[in-house]
Amino acid sequence: MSAFAAAFFFLILSPGPGVLSTAGVGAAFGYRPGARYVFGLFLGTNLVCLAVITGVATVVLASPVIRTVLLILSAMYLLYLASKVAFSGSRIAFIKADRAPGIKDALLLQALNPKAYVVNTTMIAGFPLGFQSYASEIVVKLLIMNAIWVPLHFLWLWFGVALRRLDLAPQTQRRINYAMAAAMVIVVVMALWSLRGG
Image 1 (cartoon, rainbow, N blue to C red):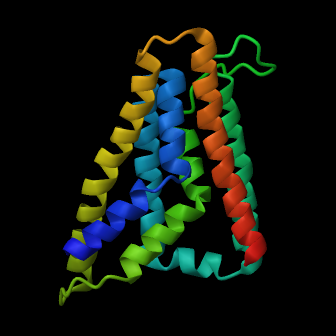
Image 2: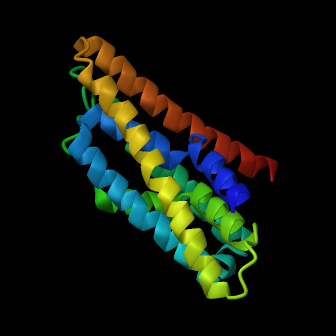
């Protein structure tokens, strides 16, 4: 069980669309909108996990065309979220974010997030815990995964909110928002590069 928990911890800790967008929403919009966003991500990641457990994800992602389309949609959506973060506190932006990304935005991100499928498939299909009952093993895995997932995402949210609360000069806050958005764009570029290589 400790190997399972450690593997999941490091998979979730590594920057991906969920944690980066969480920090970005926290930095750009504050704690309450960020907490709503994390709740949406939580629902989304558990729905993805359910799709993995039931085999729906395997059937859908068996097609290289569907995998490619999902990756492209994920990249486009993450770029959209990055633009909302980048332009949330900028007075000189061409685009003004009228509202923070919410629960629906987070649900959609997780539905299109390739990392969510990879992590959940790795954790559910791999790392047998030795339970005789498959149902018991799934329940224990879900409890461990959520016990790690929730605090780590709130830690990323805290990081974003802490940046916001520093009461930095508007120009500095804009730069932080741009940096958060740039990190999300880098994740998109890396995902598309991996697709090119595969």
